[in-house]
Length: 177
Image (cartoon, rainbow, N blue to C red):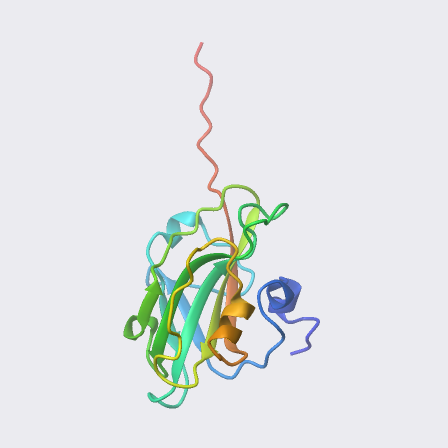
């Protein structure tokens, strides 16, 4: 696929969150057992209440992966001073399994966009070995995916996908007279 047409480039996930990479492992993210995340599609916040199922491809159970979920638009796309807001980290996920087989070092936090349309990115990194990610970050605000992956010697990403979400509109009430 042409880099100009790559949805991760168009959606500025490549650039704002990660560097250019060549996908080499399949990753399937599913909310509520039937809503599959596709690049750039919008999901309603009501679908995001429970952590998703994240299936990892690969060829070998002896390969381990780290999954990171971030919001690069926090607290609002026009003023993302908390970029990136960390929603979830799971490490030591064996290839050919799913995130439930890994070690959750930052628990899943439900996305709650307040203003504007937010991008939520899932990024998968291959680890050099098991238990190479030694510590969780101290805070969720101002997380940096690139710096975290460098700190723990993770590869360039091997897979990534993102979706958009915005605040659910409140029901409008008719004025009572």
